[in-house]
Length: 332
View (tube, rainbow, N blue to C red):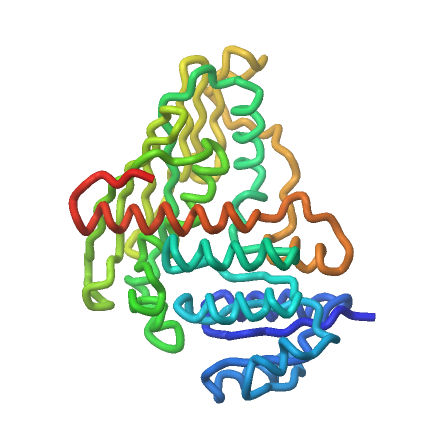
């Protein structure tokens, strides 16, 4: 029998992809759906064959619903997430978890207290190159790492991707972030997954074509990790290409990805001369959303994102924006 899910909010631009993934499976189904926009709720419910409800409490109170997927506007996350946790529902919450440190921490507290399964949309962890780099770092094959970089950019603002129902994602009051935070949270997750906790940060953000008013369309962050490694983070909606996505540099090794090809050099690994693409990579994980669906249907939870990890990303991103706004370093 399929596990019943509730879809709580359908505002996020990734909602159609999640709906597609749910419909492709036979072990889960969305039985009920809520959104504050009644027309949107009706439309998405029809796609899923679900029952739209006028109050999310109907989902919290329905014991047949084991898990909920929260794809609302970010400023609506906290009341929905804390209520779902209190009702004992497993939770997928689209990234970022919160607007910043305060609300993300409160949500993490509630989720931990409830003891429910949690996941968010940091899908890049499962990509083979990121798995490989994490393994090589843990094995010490880069020696003392001195700097890392991650870039996640697309042409969303140039292409006016957010002009219709996704316009809220350009409103800092609802989204908490602009382009730098929207795409940069994925890069931040990878950098912290590789390097650990952050000590201090600063950043700069800007607009290029100003298609969405004052909302930032690009940004660059500078991070100092607690282990002393210096990191840089690039993200934006005004890039026609993003050829070099990741770089790790150390005293005994180096790696970078250019046009989806990994180049790897290490004095510890035979054949790793950095001259030709390195292809000995692990298999990709399922998408982060499918990992959640697997977990709530009885599968493994080992590769899920921890809720404290998700909260930490909201904390650091808020600090990056503070650094950009105030022109200063922010300690964490």
